[in-house]
Image (cartoon, rainbow, N blue to C red; front, top):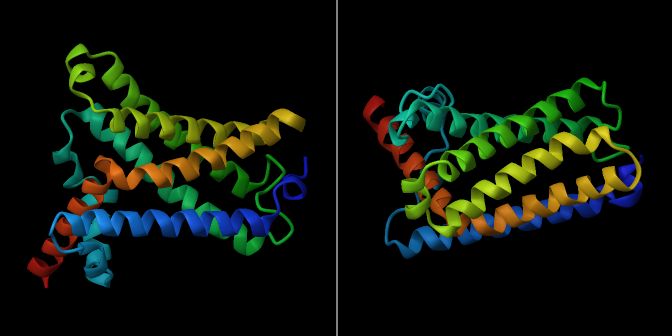
Length: 212
């Protein structure tokens, strides 16, 4: 299955950059509408990266925002999965000039990408189940939360599954993977994700200044 012949590398790249830029712009204007500083601009430094690793990747402080350990682990799976998937995508784009994605399932980069997508799926689906199985949470959950968690689940699932199918099924799953990514980028700035990103960057900025 030559996905590059169906979805040209250049077209997908342009769409990813376009939707990514639009997501960032929408996020910026939403945060500014809260009349608060846009801290993500202020946290690009070596010290800030160290704070990010300790408090977020190592779950030192981010767990305080969660209600129980399962909630923390689910969010961690999404965070780790997206981070790893981003690294794999950049590495693949730089190393694989003939196609957008590794086409052989045994390719180490393909295995890492599949595993990363699976992490996003399990994290997103766990968050979704956590609300579905609890009546109190179902009643107080806003529509935007359902939307984001559902998009995370199907985005991760399609990304993990498409390399194992050929022909029409594989191409369809691949196309849906990017459709759900673009929808996620459009929806994210209007959900709790925007607040979590702002709150996280504020924490990094505050901790960096304290440790300076």
